[in-house]
Amino acid sequence: TEKMNICLISDFFYPKLGGVEMHIYSLASCLIQQGHKVIVITHSYECDSNKNNNRHGKDNEHGKDNGKGDGNGKRTGVRYLPGPLKVYYCPFLPMVDQDCLPTFSTTFPLLRHIWIREQIQIVHAHQATSTLANESMVYASEMGLASVYTDHSLFGINDDLASVILNKVLMATLCNAHAIICVSHTCRENFIMRTRTDPSIVHAIPNAIDADKFTPINTGISNTISDSHNDRDMESHNDTSCSDNSTGVTGSSNVKDRIKIVVISRLVYRKGVDLLVGIIPAICHMHPHVDFIIGGDGPKKLILDQMVERERLQDRVEFLGSVPHVKVRDILTRGHFFLNCSLTESFCIAILEAASCGLFVVSTRVGGVPEVLPSDMIRMGEANVEDMTRVLKEAIEEKIVIEVKKVKRKRKEVVVGLQSGPESEYISESKQEIVVISSTFDPVKAHERIRGMYSWHNVATKTVDVYRHILEKNKKGKESWSVSSSTLFSSSSASPSCGLLQRLARYKSVGPLAGYIVCMIAISLHLFVKCIDWWQPRELIDVVPDLKPDPFVRERDTETHAMPCFARKRIFFQKDCMHRTDGSKEKGR
Image (cartoon, rainbow, N blue to C red):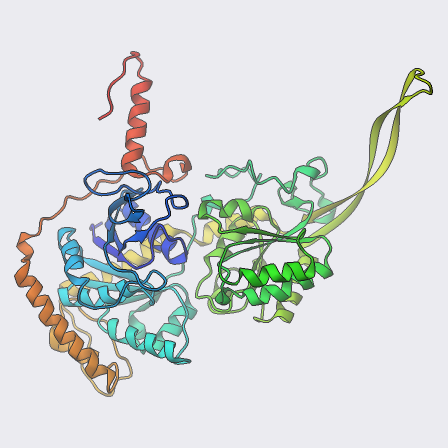
């Protein structure tokens, strides 16, 4: 297998956590395991030393590491994540929502320097709203590098001014891209319609999860996270949570004293928080045994707080606030159902995580959600309060078994005689009714099905096939694109070696007026690139040696997984010195 040098670039990466960030990190880790060289480029981050305690990174190549970033709380420079994965936190100015200020010029010298010193062959950008991603695609075509772009979200097709601007920017920056990857087939169709891209270069490669990190509780499956604090909802019924085959109950791992519905998402409009405001009171009034667990934070949390106060549901709705990703599995395993009310989704990783933990999923039928799970693991409704309430009610009635058991309780009582007479003891018996709530949905089978359907190694393998295809096409020197004013598509499968005139012809196809504006920007950028090549010749840039894969990285070792690879080497070296057979000690290097 031929080794490739790959650069993953986006404005969105650790310490910020989200779907795009987890996708980049997981893909990079699997590519490194397959023997490829991978680096990540993002902008610097302002870190809260109290909340974002850096257990993942090393400060720079000179070895400085204080565990909390720089003295001013800023994450900048070169860091190393487990793998080892080198991350360049470039000193670019973030603007709104952690996006860099778009210039299409000032970021080029540093990116060019990094790509040359790391001998990058493929530039892989992520997310349409990332300024770094869009700029890097243009820079890669100027430098003759292979470029790949991954689209993670659904956007409107000229529905409003924001959609018009974003689609025009994508048409301009991606018209020289050599391959496009979308995370679902719905996302692929949406992208082709928005940007008029040649469908032959657009690939659908679904997201994935690490199923070993999202397992049901008490299933006998080894898991990287302890189950010790997942049993809060089961303590009161440990003696009654036995299997009952006559009622179709699958086992004790899915028996709890209340019906728990879990919601974990950012509390923003796009995630359907307004739907939750209507769904929660309706379900609580229909089913007295139902409670809601809401994890996440955002500007829409206020309307949820107001709803809870107005409906007096403080005892039945639990707010957890912002949830670290390592704690998501612990929260999911507390529930029976996972509720997703998103108004738009290209591919919802949260649904996969919940299904892998053994939860039955109830979701809105939007975007790429119907592609994620089989029909027997999910129920979907339209994105309105009435239909989602109906679907959730039907799911509860179908999957939940409620049993009322009469249990005899024996209690020893002491009776004190009158006027300090002798005490007497006797045992009284009383019957007590206990409500046992069980689910007929088998969490173990659900987990095994998710494990078989989704894997980051499969995603990495399919992505590598895309890389190889465009590199082989470049080696053969084939050029399948031809300039034609009558063609429908604004881009086709380009070659990394296409010249300036070919690129200008592609830029011109963006639009009657926008095409000429983009061509003027491209010409000025081309002259700027020539000046940088003269001012800083390629021959004067040192090439850095490749990092060797860290032998201490273990897929299921969570105690050291979050530490930088070099820190973990020091830990294991010190442990080895402390437990030498001859009783002697050595100094750590």
